[in-house]
Length: 279
Image (cartoon, rainbow, N blue to C red; front, top):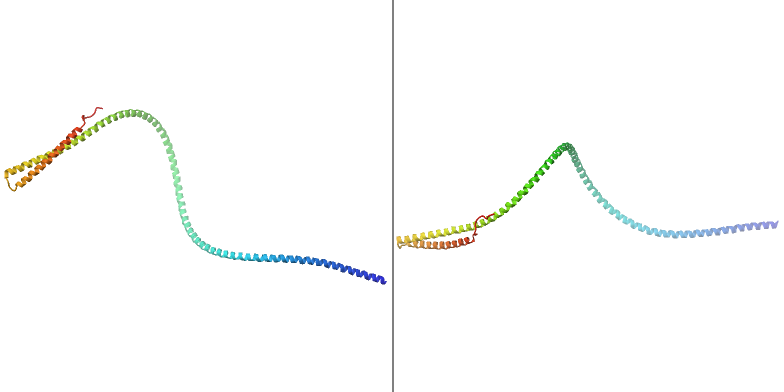
């Protein structure tokens, strides 16, 4: 009985030891799991620290970006203010355009009325065009008749062209005769010019002869006065009259001989046969 009790106690102790060993193994496994968990937590803490550092740098970047966005927002606010001013100006312009549109609407109404009148006028023109078409048809018939007449006139024109050719031949012959007569006329004109020069020189010679005749008359008068009244104070007038007569006689004689020489030269320049040439 004692052995059985000892054996039973030993078995109980073995069971206790086994349970303790089993619990110890479980605790070791649990400790291992805890160490693994601690390592995982350490790794997560390291990753969290890295993430915090990255988040801090990202936060700084976001802060700088926010500052830039604030500046851009300020610029956008200014641009919005400018656009608001521009919008006000555009609103005023739009108001003016509305007024102009109203005015143009009135003008458009007037144009519509004018267009209606023009449509009526176009209808009238269409009716007139129909009338003109009928007139054109009638004129076409008349044109056909005129074409026949034109053909007849063309035949007459051909005959008249032949007659004109004959007249042109005669005109050419007459033109040659006219040229011959023109040459004769030119020759006679030259002769007339030279005769006019001769007449002018003869008239100048006659004038100089008149000077000579007047000088001789004054000379005769001065001699007669001197012989009749004798020597006195009036003899000075007689001497002056005699000198004047001598000057006139000398001037007239020189001019007369010069005119005679010019007349002789003009006679030499005259053509030998003065008259119309025979055609």
